Image (cartoon, rainbow, N blue to C red; front, side):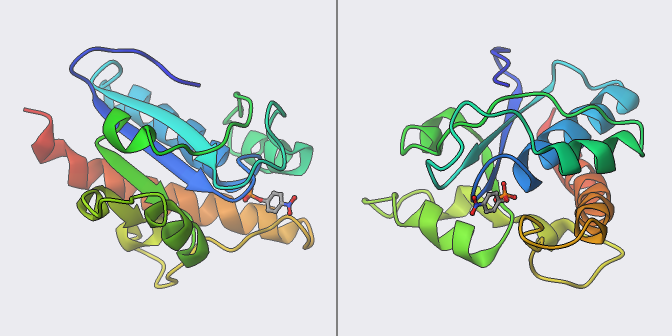
Length: 164
Ligand code: 4NP
């Protein structure tokens, strides 16, 4: 869900399908931003590198895992496009494949400094990637939420100095 707030710091979370990991990251981050009282100062959106699920809501299994933590997942899937490089301040890839697929669209090679791996902001977990839960069991969806809560808290702390 794109919020057009002028002058806000703009975050885009990206995975493969935009129905599991990146909408979770988007909605968890928005939840933490509201809790911190920074609504309007940071905006969140998400996208997928694929076109597999365009227009679909977040996966039911992912919604249920988020709901257990009191977080509702809203949004509908869209595909990442090259124009997103200019529309956002930071682009957060869920795994290395997403990271490389995003940068493959950076034809001029000028946006690498905007693209990060989400897990680089984890403070309690040491994994490099948010694992794709789509073809696995339900525990994989809980794991995604745990990792993203940690990464989003770290990301929020990292962004704070950029807000002033
Ligand atoms: P996501 O999960 O990238 O976290 O949204 C996936 C959703 C769908 C597929 C793969 C991963 N798929 O192959 O359809």
